[in-house]
Length: 138
Length: 243
Image (cartoon, rainbow over all chains, first blue to last red; front, side, top):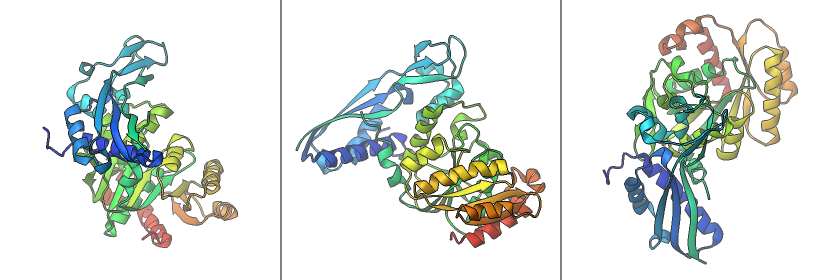
């Protein structure tokens, strides 16, 4: 699948690099050693594709930087009864999983609190893609 | 931790020449019909036009256009579907015909996500069908999307106008461009809304008469564009000098 540009991960990688470039400029970094990224499991980002996109899109300032991508479990909490649970991919059929891949909030159309049945839950963590830290030299 | 998505939104929108946010203070003023018909009329004038339904919890433009769960194409992000001459984006592609209950933070997340990954490419006009009111969608637009110009829809009702006045006041206070206020579903000759709009110093874009044939034309674009409603909106568009 790597090399196939028909991927949503490409857009997410572009966003990460745009944000990272803004941080580098704001902090006046001359060399970037490490970029740490957190990817929530809810969005089911294909890590191989995402890392490939980062490698293809990175600009010169990031050429020697190590991109560390960590995944985070998606934890949901019911706003009605307070029940907390971990999202499991197999809760969704293929079409629903694909919808959540593109727009994680679509989850509210497909699942409910396993305890009380409410669709009013929050994604406590593990939603999308986050730029966690950048290590570099000024 | 930094959410990287906001950093790319204006880059994504750079190829879009003008962004028109069709808004209202209240629901039920015909905003989605105005947004959809305006987009279709612009496309009929040979412009490249996008229509983005931002009313995530109550989307209706897909019904107006008569499209059934059209899917954007995945290509280094999302490329809007092309329907009736429009680049078209609606969350219905992901929620289907199910209810999508979203609180404010979830709404914002969905809005940011779609703006961050959607590739409109070279587009003359991107028409946004905004949800009613001055809550998350308007605030997110003001925070994240540069260059949006607001076209505000009211009816002849003083109740609708009062909410519109507050929306207009908010936008003007923030120096956000307002194209003007459109009086929709006008039932009789009366210039009270026109006078009120002028009193707050905004352009009155015109009155669009109530047209019972519009309901019959929902889902049928060619019939919709033949209605008195569409013809009247076309006159407004000519006066607006958007093009």
